Length: 77
Image (cartoon, rainbow, N blue to C red; front, top):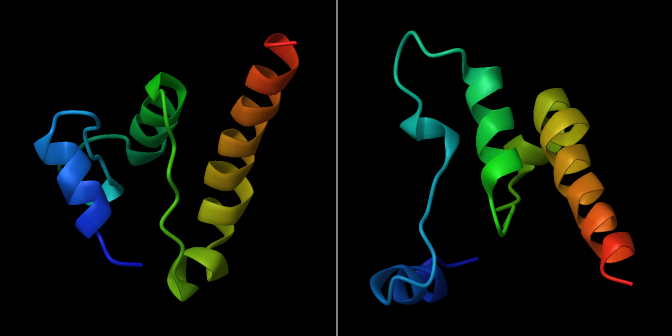
């Protein structure tokens, strides 16, 4: 997927982008990812073969995103 649609939304200040490559050295990366996933209004997972083969991405990040979506869905009824 191209990032062009996201770039347009970012330029319009509708969304802001964050990814794990922005984590600085010395930061507890797993806590930072968990914090960002918990604080996000929207989670857009950009899937790649590396992402799909990562136990952490699939087992933690995807599960957290799905769990938040299900919680939102059930609480909005």
